[in-house]
Length: 300
Image (cartoon, rainbow, N blue to C red; front, side, top):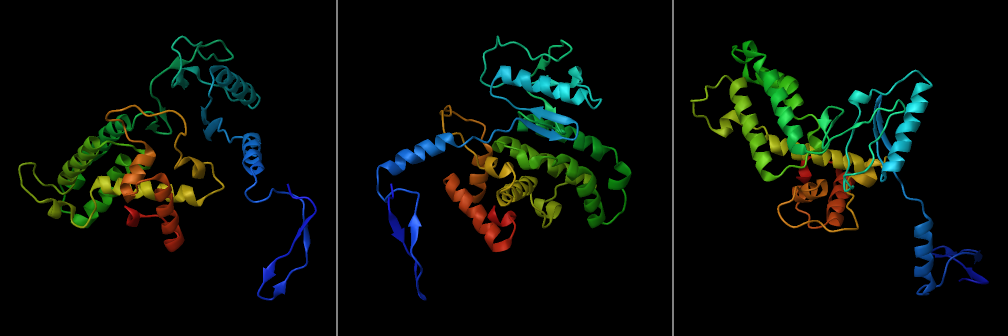
């Protein structure tokens, strides 16, 4: 380590006054790597234990015992202000855990239901394809509920504006978080094309080109890609938020199985910008933010 060492800063205007160095190690010293390891292990990890939106709470834990403790503490604190947990609406989802683990229990002694997927804030959290399936059904219901609008003589741009506001917005809810394989993406575009034919009152037997149908508008899968990249840029820009550390996160341990796996969020983002590595992807996003102040479809 530095002992009795003094230094000064050289500038075009001359040298600064000498000052003492009280911390650090000499460049190239083998002690440097050892101290780095000690410091990195002492640095506390950032762990998210809960995600809250009003009274919709999602608790996160690596261990069943800790999850039970979190649940009990939340129930206890909520009861102090007159809020009670609805056991029928509270569900548990687990990953990489033995099947014979004890169930989570409420303070009233009710075992919570364990599921493979659940809906949180309007979207299914474990499967983008399930979420897309539900979004399609809800969107078609909204579309089919307004035949008087689509069959009217309203100008094209008014019909489309109405469609974007009342149907497309429903279909694309939470689309920024989807991780879809090519086949569901094609299905999404096909669904959107059929919807446009209904909106523009074009008979299903009538042949029209996509150019006439879409005009200058993007395919729906392209709109999703733009919105996904915009979300990633927003997360990267706001370093004070936990999302900035999660949006490009990849596990450093373990190994993915072989075969046709569902792409991860980072996989989708990398493919969108043509990046080979996550570092290259982060560089593309940072460059876009620096040049324009935002992240939009120009990266896609």
